[in-house]
Image 1 (tube, rainbow, N blue to C red):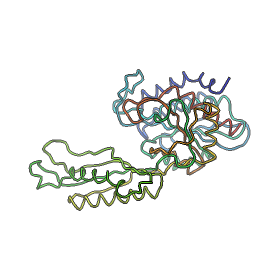
Image 2 (image 1 turned 45 degrees about the horizontal axis):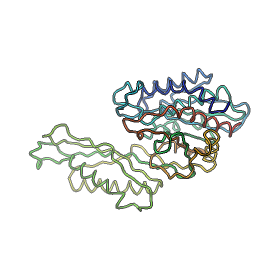
Image 3 (image 1 turned 180 degrees about the horizontal axis):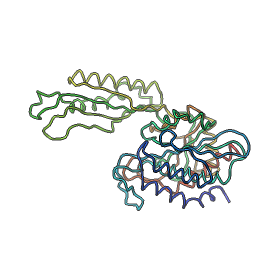
Image 4 (image 1 turned 180 degrees about the vertical axis):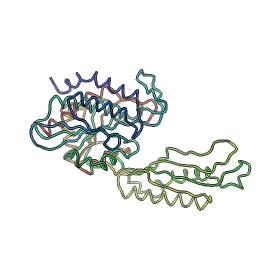
Length: 383
């Protein structure tokens, strides 16, 4: 029986886990129910999970039969602050929170791999299973590292995957080198003087300042970045006001800037600060810009990417393996783990709405494939 056939036998259970998690999504650093669910399953496999790592993270170790390298496999667990529109029976039961990025699938797939590995431990070394909180706000990996992850559960290599609607269903994709952008999450608070909508001349309008700043921010990449570089700035929130005839006293913008090179990220940040200072001078408002999170670019180690490619080829076949795709504009704080040990981040294609779309849902057909690639990675590296 092939490895994929064996993980297909686990597919109904992984699907059940995934849909349970989908019904009960939790935001970054609030994954207490999810963590408990994961820990309970790991205990049922005969493992000894440790909880509360990086606030709500869970780590378990599968020991091999002889000494050897440590291989870490990571899944993220958090959901997004948004509603979903799907009509499926497992839709979120928590208004305003949804697994619209597929982290429920990542967690279920790693649980499936964990069950197989617990029943079939590697010949050498050990496997470190990382169930990470708070990927969506870019703070979870750092929290686990700050909580002594590498001292308590050291690893020599690290791997993770993400579903990807941009790639053909059932295909795996991995590349060497630059794979995803790094980012800086920024928050801009604008303080003015509120007042009556008809007496605008007696107010200092932070809403107008925010609108002007939003337009200026959208022009930064086109004006100041070499067109040959990967760079982007996106605003995700502009909040101000409560009534049609009241000029508010404050406003806020939130967004991200992203690039494949740290120096380009810093250029964007400097231009963002310059724009904030300019709008402050122009409008008379106080404008404060701060970084709430920062993640470096994701760069796949050459050998680690080759290990993923070999595992994916063994599981899916060479015809379903893509090695020459361009770097993607997304960001994942898995890059912080790659700063600790060589690693690779790969993708599994699916047909669906794009991640972070209210109609998105993880494709359960990916679960046995993802679990099998994780297991094959361990088998090839540890025997």
